Amino acid sequence: MQKLKERFAGDLDFPMLEDKNHQVIDRYGILNPDGQGWPHPATYLIDKKGMVRWKFIEVDYTQRPTNEQILQALRTIR
Image (cartoon, rainbow, N blue to C red; front, side, top):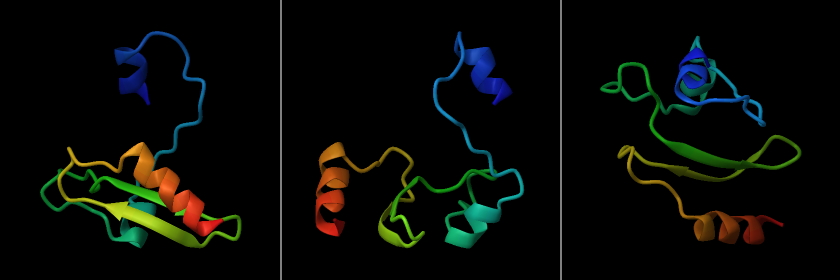
């Protein structure tokens, strides 16, 4: 969080989550062993009951789901 404050001016208008002890990273199995503690990029759609309904996990950090892919997944799980 401190690094973000140093890099960007102003306050963030959204909450930031931090996983210092890798509890979430380990639970979802997305730790990148070559990434110096950084996880593989992942996007999850989780329903109101806490169930993962869709996920996108990629080992290449430059690959992310498109907005259309996410919107399509949202449409299918409604």
